[in-house]
Length: 464
Image (cartoon, rainbow, N blue to C red; front, side, top):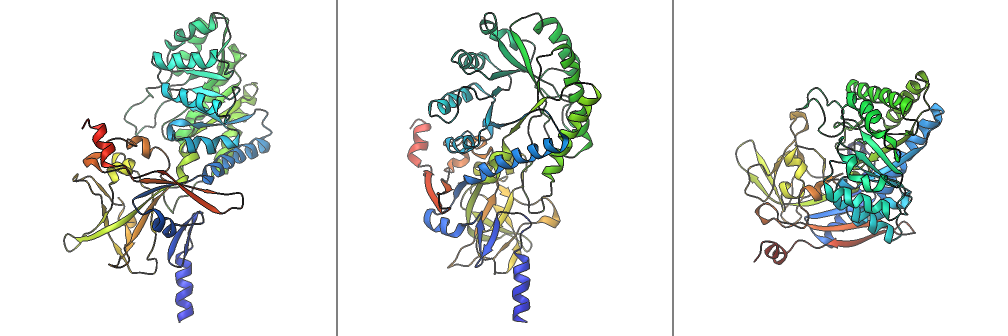
């Protein structure tokens, strides 16, 4: 009987997702014993596991290179990292180890590009795709990059007025540009058409009547992106097909066009039940592009992708201590964490995003259904699963050995949306941030990137 019970426990800990393992009733994340990290640094604690960034980049490159080989696809594949997903230097430094290119979305991304080049992380031949609605400071920074010898800076035209901002470049020199399509949004979205880009029906006329009449401008790239990302839905495939046909139409009148940017949006694992066939999606995208180009007698384009969350999301986690268990009535148990969801995981509050939630310790203890509450006085500072079938179940803690929990794959957007280093709701301090890497021998090494935010730093921001 005892052996049968042990077998049952072992089966229970057989995670469907890679990167998680229970050893001696404590959770390991990508081979990292998290209780050791907590004992060294305490909680609340943000961690970034840097090797995961390189793993994701190499995974995407492999997916598309395999897909292109299967389809005998003649174009090249280029991987771009979206800096907006996480601007931290440690993210960009790790990403740049993998021969990547970059996508920007604001004026203040450009100093990051310069810093990377000055430190030898990139060279001036790197592709820099400049997206977004651009004010004058953004276009000025783009022009200065081009004037300083960055040869593959491509401003992606978001509207038909933007081109004029680059006149002092193209009046004497060649200027490469891209055009962003204003894609139709999913039927259940609040708006029918994206606020970004130029409408399908206007792009060809705009090219013929304006761009083609300006000799030094080369339209090199057509940019396609939809809000829901790359997913196996009728909506996605219909929009992609429409985009490919538009590419072929433009290519007929614009021979220098040679690249298609299919944006980004490969999903990351935000639950243990996550099921997404990455290779199938890459295969089908490449196959459809190739098929339509053959039908239209057009050479297939070079492909660019822009992966942000996919690059960095699964590298991040945040660890909390359950400081108190509160029984509010006969049915509800609240586990109070030592931080705030609103400030440390704003997506859980703002868009009801779910992440992988697991206990760090006490895997051998009895489980109970709970709600999770944060430290602010705001009634919205909580985390529960919306589905009755997916309620939060966590082990019971003990007075002499508290319960620790972790939210995983939180590495994209949470710091910037939460106002990293600034003022948080109820002046909840930003937690410590620890970077985890491996040395040449594969041994785990850690370093403190940022201390817990101090009262002194917040008082200074507030003018005291």
